[in-house]
Image (tube, rainbow, N blue to C red; front, side, top):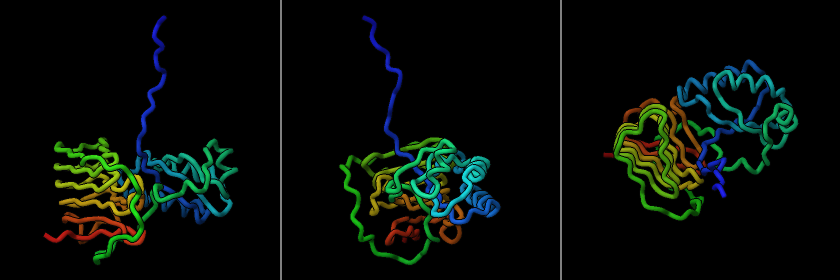
Length: 237
């Protein structure tokens, strides 16, 4: 008997999702904010997956078109005011409780003052040995440390992504994306020697390039959560 050939290869993969809540149905205001958001992310916005939600009735089709026009990729909508329109548009509708800390949401403007560690308990995961990467992480590459910290000895290029369930340490320039606490560990941190990042995130709370420019740009920094808000501080030498 001939051996049956597998038709599919199914792999687990962490996917960073951006949650978009529609607050105002004005298409021109939505278009302007989407364009501004994508400019702040640069190339990293291309194909960015988003989940939509709203507490008000809106025409969804024009909004989906605006998102596709700027390169965003709507994947689904949350149960609620958008549910019927999403189903008509062919989008899956997810239960409202999917909107947890593992779904990315914007952070407030970074602050420079020191802060105590968060009081929320870290996500319980089985820890693995630290993953160490010595080669440069080039544009388009994604490195993921499952249930572990990630140490990158070299540069993380624009368009590259480094992700860890624990902490992320980058000892070269960080020009791409760094995501710590990918499974919800609110005690995780991002450390980098030279911060030029497109995006920094901890447990789904993130700041994009426009939010992390300024006095801290090019310096050694750490990013961590303070009572649910992302803080970015200079590391003392």
